[in-house]
Amino acid sequence: MLFNADRTVTLQTRTCIHCQGTCKVAGEKKCPKCKGTTRGPRGGLGRCGCFRGMVPDFDNKVPCTNCTDGQEPETITDSVPKEQYRALFASNTIPIEFTEANRGSSFNESLIGLGLVAGIQDYGTIWDRLHRGEELDVHNEIREDIANGWNQLCKIARKDGDKIRLCAKLVVILHRGGYSARASFTDDTTAVVKAANSELPESAGMAYGTRMAEQGLNGTLLAASAHTQ
Ligand SMILES: [Zn+2]
Ligand SMILES: [Zn+2]
Image (cartoon, rainbow, N blue to C red):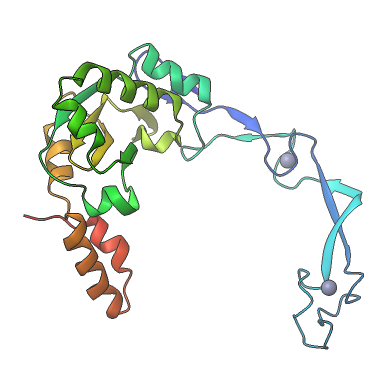
């Protein structure tokens, strides 16, 4: 993964996760327990626990079918290597800005984390410190927490035509239940903050999610992505 000066990201290759770069993976052999029949101890078909009567054969390696040279292409859902992630914030390539919202946690912030780069639920600890004059300390600690974390590339970058483009900045929303950090792809973070502050509150999300679940839908996910008007 290369982070370029024009904020594009170039994907490279990385060690193949199937063969760990060796180009060889375990072969297969007939399961010694069921002799390939998949029958369990009491005779039930498919009850053995092996995969279709086969188990990995670590003594007989076969060529990896996932790669040719022990390498495979990186993808946007790969994690950013920790050192590179840290450097993005240390070098201010991704600036972090702070804003306060006098509200509790949203349902999304407390339970799902859709679209969040970072965040914690602290039931008011940070909010109290902010209003005791510890704003600078709080901001510095959150900066550290974010830089020490790590994330999939897609949390801080997105596809833009045939390129991958890094976000313009992160905005940290400090609220009565903790904080959440979100990527903004424009320098003006107003829209991101507005969308975050209009997410369903925790209690409403619970009720909404329950109602949806009763109808057989994925109420949790729906509630997390629903917004108040
Ligand atoms: Zn491989
Ligand atoms: Zn078996």
